[in-house]
Length: 313
Image (cartoon, rainbow, N blue to C red):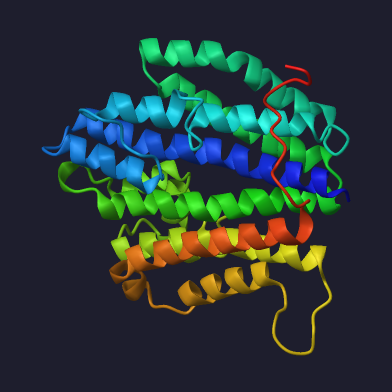
């Protein structure tokens, strides 16, 4: 397919997933910070911004500043609002490759977004977070029901899977980096990954840290686990380029993801917990390498097209 369409679909998948996962991350920390304010609230808020790759502003930093930067600010690349706007603008460039229902879902969200932000700033972010998660679920449900399983579908799912690995690693990293009473519990992380009930059914109610880490990183059947997302991304790359040489793997993106998967797949659960920060950094680095390799191999060279301005504006 055209490299422009492939790139648009890839980034639609990434941006929609980024919006949902940033919502999940903020939901975790907003509740913890507000319900049980830690002694070092500012330090932990700065840690959350750092994990998300967002520079902290000058002056005091609290939960309000974190929400403004990561939820509402269109100038912050990692923010929920910026991700939803970017997803819709990429969808405008891929109208021929997605269904009208998918585009309408993102278009409605784009036009409703300013009102949702105003309401969230006034009354709190809970309703805003729920709306973002519902929008993401609607979009992915429509994609699942209305897209042919062709190359366009593969690029959409590839982008979503890479973003899911990266954002799940960031969510776990905030737990490792924050301190005191503001550190999210393992139960809290499970709930906001949508994994609480699935974990209970798998381990019959046992809530041991090593098993929670194992579930979020390695479970083969839970779609939001790191292992499942890595495997899905690898399968997309295999279908996009099924031919392989007689020795090794020539695809740099597959190589990076395969190394990341095997490095956690064959580790003991106790070792995963002990070396959690190193594993999470490795996963984020692997996603960055894979995304860069995909861009160089499949997308057009040069600067990406910015869809935020109309022609002649």
